Length: 467
Image (tube, rainbow, N blue to C red; front, side, top):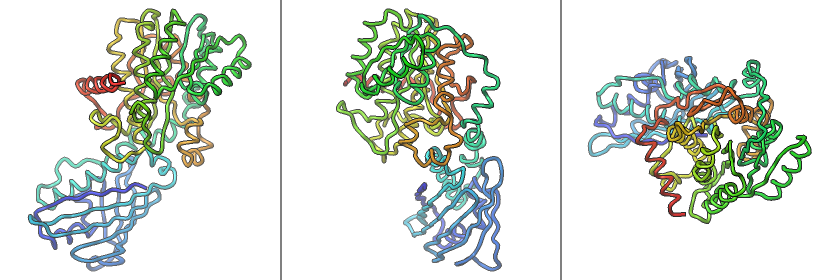
């Protein structure tokens, strides 16, 4: 369920505002997400009046049925809308103001069926749809028109990413892509590969396959018992596996610095770093160092570890860095002024998505900074995979998509390909899914200029200076 609340003030009298906005026969003239609206009853609007509203949605016009449940002119109207994939309850209140009329708009939107599985990813997008609608209403009532109207953002994001993702991010999408994969049999003997978050899910699957290709794999995890268990399991499963274990919590900058020191002391050469460890939390947590835990684990710890190891990676060139991101990052940009989400209500899914967007920004930053130094840096999206993190943090999603989730091995395939394959040895600065480059942005507010990217990196440096 997504709650949208907006307030606007216009210069038009109260009665005129109510007559226009409360009658959804007019909604297509102010909401850019609506293609057409028809009242299905004769006479004026009132309780029980019905509308057919054609919403622009996922490349087509989807009809929604609306009915007026409460009608209190000229102060309040409540309408309920339903379709095959959306339920909405809209309440609009009108109050006189010193300059005209104040309009308070409140909508509860619930996505259902297959689309409902994407609710965590679409929450911020729906908020921006609300912004577009109320901006259109304000322009229409103040007589400034609605020039430059465009399809609602929810329409564009489904067209360009999320509906294709319903197939492409699933196990079926992987199987389709895998038909064109060349065998991955590169010999990594003599190569040292560090994998964070190696005790389960994608990290464990990647570590096992990299070990099978002959690499010396360093398993990094925060739980010593789990690390030891995974090391034993991999030695039993991979003949001649060369494994090392390092225990560190990437949410602790002190532990990350100590980890980097041990790695540099132990390994004269480091060839691959896989930044995979991550968390998705329901509630905001702060570490003993004063850092929001999602930012610290998913982003800041990897930023520090990578920077500490960059000189050794350069000395060991050709070398590679693989950043494991998530499709959720498509819905978010980074907020440099509030990296730790201290100024807005905490949303674990949004915090996670922003940290994953940050990983893509760092991929672009490092790829530029390392030109000519023999270190290739790429990000990858694993698709929707069956991992302990998904089971713990998104249980409803996991239950609904259980038959379509990728295995950890399928999700980790592109990690291994970017780390090992000869075909990937000259690729840098890109985002990958199923061994193919993908656009890093589909929504305008997720894009950052070069100056904004530098400000983001400077903000991370400032956080580290105090710790």
